[in-house]
Every structure is written in structure tokens, then in C-alpha cells.
Amino acid sequence: EPEVTQTPSHQVTQMGQEVILRCVPISNHLYFYWYRQILGQKVEFLVSFYNNEISEKSEIFDDQFSVERPDGSNFTLKIRSTKLEDSAMYFCASSEAGLNTEAFFGQGTRLTVV
Amino acid sequence: ELKVEQNPLFLSMQEGKNYTIYCNYSTTSDRLYWYRQDPGKSLESLFVLLSNGAVKQEGRLMASLDTKARLSTLHITAAVHDLSATYFCAVEFGNEKLTFGTGTRLTIIP
Image (cartoon, rainbow over all chains, first blue to last red; front, top):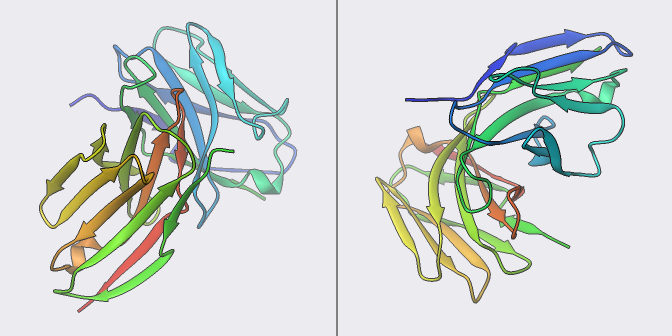
């Protein structure tokens, strides 16, 4: 069964460093998303991406964050100058057609900023 | 403001008992999802509810949707230990992003 895959599963980084979280969405999906879950809290939307551009972003997704689809298969989230409060589980998701189609989630990357 | 609220936040119940988790949302929705999350794991899709009066069942879990009341319920029948997890509802409010509820941490006690 097709699935969304994320790498790495766990990343530890020092405060101020840049990190790139990687995702391979399901191959025929056109909409891609990043969500964040701080430990013990609810899942929060960060950004959606379609047709090589951001279609929507939340207030959390400030200039520190960027997304890219560098090739036909990968979808990345870059966090510049990480802060302690960026420590969270980051989930990538993809859906076939956006609105009214189910999004499928990857297994997540746990980011720890020390 | 788009809001999704769940209650209770924590639920501890004995095996064999029945209970219901509630999900309220603030405005008209296109669809509602229920997810299960085990500690440190990803989100497992349980149900997708599309229309008023929709009811779906899988094993000991049954989900329903009342769009007029802006309420969804997740009912657990004769709970077993394997159902211990955190359950989230998530709502699609006219765009493709999901707004998640606060989650209900369910613990089944033998």
C-alpha cells in the first residue's frame, strides 16, 4: 500500500542551526502538507503546497520556515536558525486532490533542539 | 475563528465498559475525521464522516456526525486494553487543511 515516508525519524540539532526535514509523498498525490505537534499537544497545521507554490500557511509558518519540492518526489521543510520551541514532531501529509480528499500522514520526524 | 474542541481530554475506563468522546466544532464543515495516535507514533485514520447523520463502525468503535449540532461522537463499546491511545477529531473547514481537536487520551484499565 502506498505511504508517505519521512526522514529522518529523529533529529537532534543545536539551537541556531538549520534543519531540513524530508518527505516523500504518495506518488500520484498533488497536495502536500506539513503539520506540527508539540509534545502532549494537538496537531497544528503549518503549510499546504500545490503546483510548486504555497497555497496556505498558518501564523506559525513565519520567515524561519520554508518548503520546497526540489525534484519530482521529495517535499522538504527547512527550519532556519532553530529555537528550543521548535522541538516537536513534524508530520508530512499528502492528498490526491486537496479539498474533500483524505490526506495521508507520514510517520513523523521528531525534532529536538538543544 | 475555526475551533475544534474535544471532551473529555483524559479518559480512564475499565475494560468492558462503554464510553463516548465528543467533538464540537465552530462552523460549517465539509468533512470530519477521527484519528488514533499511539505514543510517539503517527496518526492512524479511523473514520471519515462526510454528511449529516453519517455513522461508521469498525470493531468496537463507532463514529457519528450531526452537522446541525456541529457535533461528532466516537463511541467505544466494551473497551479492551488495545484501544488505549490518544484520539483526535479533525475538521476540514472549506479548504484543504485540517483543524485538529485537542485530543482525548484514553486509558483502558484491566
